[in-house]
Length: 259
Length: 140
Image (cartoon, rainbow over all chains, first blue to last red; front, top):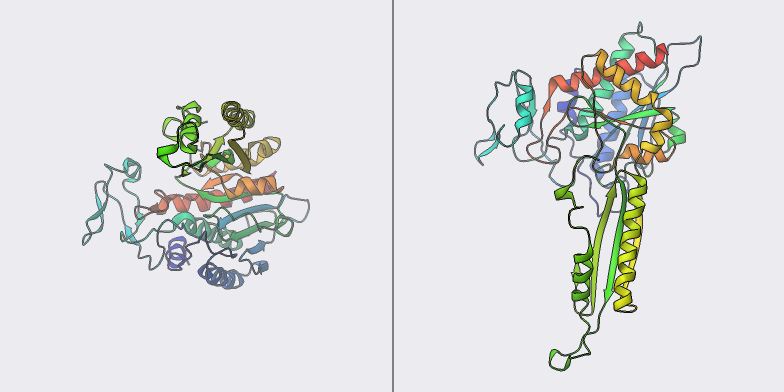
């Protein structure tokens, strides 16, 4: 099976995650997809294949170096797709040898992928682009990552002349709702280090992200009938407004970038 | 923002790549709350919860992990583009759980919507990078 065949097969599984279910995986489709992948890994002949009740699928490609100790490296991708848009009935199409210009995704609804809105398209003239039919997301985030990892280990198995240590692979649920790592058993995975195959454009390599916190600020007021309110009413919205005005105005996402 | 005359709640997210600046931002908010309470005693309260941290502090001691990925990319003809994520990632949480875990491209663009697409050639290169990392680690 080729990389593209794998990818086209994987996007058929609806694995949209859901922030509100309080279950792991958050949606049953992710477990169905994980079970499908588990079978594929068995067919490929990988070792230590395990799928736990939370939908974390792990496996090993054993190393072929026996005369010394080689670090164990892991590769990780996520099973789910974004809650922001449907991933049901994804119907992809390959635009071969993209000539530049608009790609009509859906003529009926007039949905077009255009370099005017997405100038990055022009970096890929002459390449083969897998696009949607305009009704769903594609799910390259992160089924491209899964297809790449499985195709790479398949390649390594067929090329024993390439010497490598143990390779661990893992596919986890619910990355898109921020819970992909929560039930990830690092000890069970047993790698010295790993890479998530979850970045965007070709070349991206990331090892920095935000420090993040959420702050909840509460203001208490005192409501009195407006006709009798003089010196009595304390309007919490007014005080909150005073607080907002004191905040640094330019340190917001619409005014910042980079580091 | 949720508000009535009786009670108003503001919810903010605080983000910074630099840990010291991040801590200063949180202190600044607490300082403003004290200022408000100086004028309106007992009116204002704040609760700050950390969500996740920059994985850089966990990756820096093991920089060869990044260097191997860069070398693998160059060897398969891909120019590495190191950039900060303006958000979080599973790899950050895993790094803080003891598994250093940078993020590598999978090749797609316009994630999370109908305009998402992926060049086949980028996927092939990502697969090549994985094979090359396995080979490089085996050679070291």
